[in-house]
Length: 183
Length: 184
Image (tube, rainbow over all chains, first blue to last red; front, top):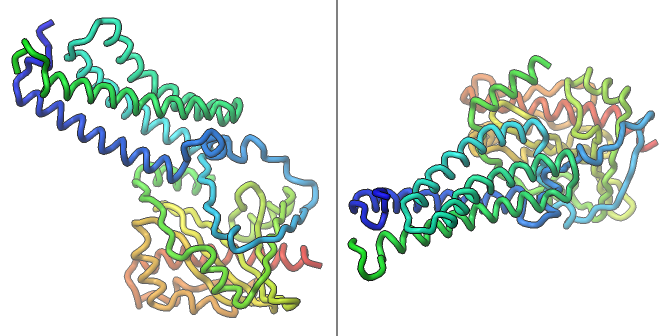
């Protein structure tokens, strides 16, 4: 195939490197945002997406009062950031197209790498499937079972892993080629 | 409903900036329930009828139909009550803490959360004395913080004062309607 990043012009290699660095930066802040608002454990993800809609009881026939003691530590406890259906629709609408564009950009890099066809196809599949799994997990957590929070976590880690593998391979093949390959 | 759709549409168009904590909840509790050493959370699970009643008064229903009021005591002496009320605006949510004395008047109001975008508006409004205008309000009275700031601050500080007014009005309605009856 004529499209080979190992033999590409230095300008193309630099473009790909800058693209990967920019995506990496956005992924780092994406991970920070996840840690702030949803967390990295199935329990916290389930609490974020399943929310009260999964467990909300019917309103009582007459107003009821429940009291419980509070300590100052309870006041300091971080609140769970809940994503309701409307917000999840908005998130899906905004994120899924963007994840598609990112997956396409990374897949184009994969197409320019020296990889066996099966590995390249597998990697491209992971790049697109990971965000699908991420968002499918959120919707299933909300409407099917909180246990599907694990799908969101697997999807998120798969996105990170896909990016890391593509970046490592691209940087190695573009800038540190093995002997016998022209720079 | 129309307002809700408009708000949602505006929120989608305007990029809501991240939320920032202006005053930590424990600090707000200490300021609004001074001297208290024991606290109770009083969760009022509203019936449909009561939720509608509250909605008619202040055009608002609490999240999940549950109002949470916190009370504080110093030994055996009641110090007062406190509510954290969230107000959704097209620029994102703000959170207002409203403290009440044992006599049922507003002891103080603190804006505890806003968004990055609204933070300077809140700070300007508070610096102009916004929260002083709520002191000693009683349930049934109307908060007029925005009107008091009119002409003394920028338009955005005045705008945010209107949103804080809404939060205080909700707290007054909730406290007046459900706290007093619930505790008897």
